Every structure is written in structure tokens, then in C-alpha cells.
Length: 312
Image 1 (cartoon, rainbow, N blue to C red):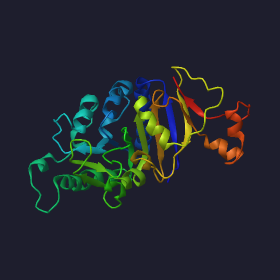
Image 2: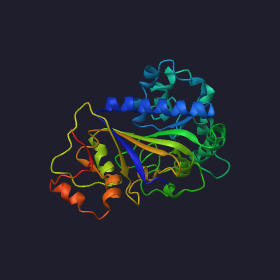
Image 3: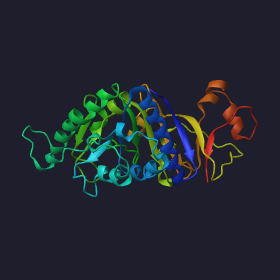
Image 4: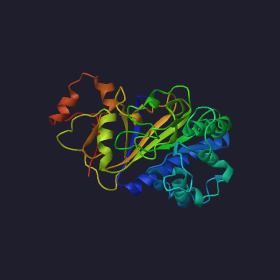
């Protein structure tokens, strides 16, 4: 399981969308060349709006007929309902690209009107159906793993419909689970679980913009004190660093740690204001108990690059 993530800090939310599109293109092209299909799971929240430029930026270069789109989580409502994640994804992406409709996997909406005869909740019934008829076929056609999951994270640290202190954080058997008591309305939802995100996904990408994301980011990654002379950044600079995840994970979003895959966090400078990510390469070179970080804090010049700082 990974203990580090690649953190890409971009100047603005607009650049975040561009960087996300670039990452999706890169991962999808690799999937097509290796397996001939693209399987991607998308969450709701702010993620759909970040996908609006994908059809424009890729033009005719994408083999959309080979894409299979799943939902990382969904509210138990009709796809035409304002709360529907699929509805938002359609508005911003799917209505603008020629992915065959049978390769877009939404809820079985007939279950919204039917009372369960098996003692399960409606959310559980929909989750079981989604795992059997949507997720499992997608995994089978793509070598046993999803190629990509694009996720967001809330101010409480939740991701998908996996909320802090909820029993679903301990789910180890189900790949898709129902939830009846979501702390955010609507209360009934389905969600991919950690076994899928950590064991059955090749690349996981988190996206977040704005200062409201800073408390989460400063808590989930190891940080260090700022050097006396801050590393200057400008509104045109995009930086990438390898950051160490805090252990144990303080929030559900930081519990996503693929066992054999890539973990990427794409955030804007507002989200990273005054956050100084600890450089694991520095610790490796100078030792975990070295006084080099202390020297940096005092302004002593050293030959190794110091922490990444994203600030306005």
C-alpha cells in the first residue's frame, strides 16, 4: 500500500481542470494501448464541473466508444433529479462526447419504486445490483481493475459517500455498499468501498480547490516548518512533489491508498496556502533525525532542495 502521493499544485481552479484533463488523457491512452478499453469511476460534488473541458481539449483524439463510465458514488434518486451525480456528469461531460449509452453505468432506477422483499434497504438493493451488473463486468473487461477513479474530498474529509466515523469505513467484503444514514442529504446512497479504491483501481486522482480544502490537506500530509526565506511561487507556476501521508489516516479521503497503483492529488494554490509539505527525499538523504530541517528553519543554507510551498 502506498504511503506517499504525488501532489500537483496548480495556480488556479481553471488550471486544475486542465491538469485533470491532461491526467485523464494520459491514463486513458495507456489503458487503450494495453487493454483496449478505458474503465473510469467518477464522483460527484465539484468533480463534474472540472470535466467540462475534456471534450474540447481532446477534440477527436479520444476513442470514446471504448470508454466505460461508472459512478464512484451516487445518491438514490432518479438521474434527472438535481441531486444526481450522474445527472451532473452528463451535463458537464457525457452529453458532449459519443460514449455509447450502454457503457454509462447508472443506478437501476426501477428499484427506487420497489420495496425490497429480502429485508434489505433500497440503498442496499441498488448497491448489490450495481456491483453485480455494473462494476463486476467493468472489472472483467479491464483485467480485474478499474483504470482510473476521479474523486473529490469534502471539508469533513469524506470522499465518495465514505464519511468520518461511519461503519462503512470498516467494510472489507462489499465492493459497492448502500448507505441509509448519510450525514449529508440525501440520506440514501451507494458508494464504492475501500477494497475497490485501494485494491482494484490502478490510478486514483483527488481534486480540490479553494482555501476551505487547506485544513484537510495540512492534516493528511506530513508537513514541516517554513524556511526563513519562502520558496517563491507565481500565478503561472505548477509544481509537483512527492508527499508522505500521515499514518494513521485522519480522514476517509486519506484512507485511499492503492496497494499497487498511483495516487495523485491535484489542488490549487489557494488550497495549499501556507502548507509546507515535508520532502521524504530530504529525510532519506539526511536521516529522519538530522538537524538539517532545523537549520533550514534558522535560514542556514543547505545543498538539498527544501519543502514545497504553495502560497499566493
